[in-house]
Amino acid sequence: MTTSAVRPADPPGALGLGELSSQFRALGIRPGDTVLVHASLRAVGPVHGGVRAVVDALLDTLGADGTLVVSTQTPDN
Image (cartoon, rainbow, N blue to C red; front, side, top):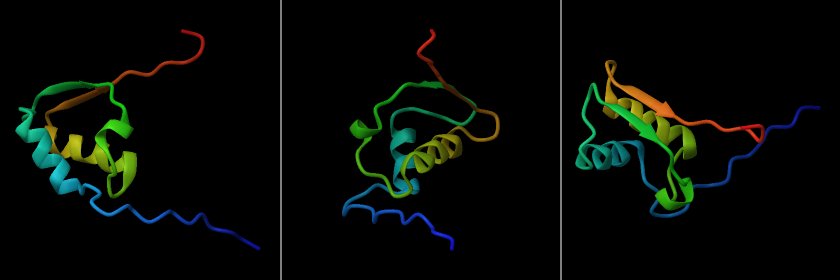
């Protein structure tokens, strides 16, 4: 028997990819920019598609020549 994970429904008022991209442009992010992101997704608020949608919106805004930099940390550093 197989089981599949059921994703909870997005809350009312959740942001979509297009709205996120528009907001990133309004912040001054332009195609070809290099952007370092360290963010609390809770502060962003509810997003249709969750974390993946935020990343996709940033990549869409930056375009093919842009660079998205995300810090990573482990308990050892």
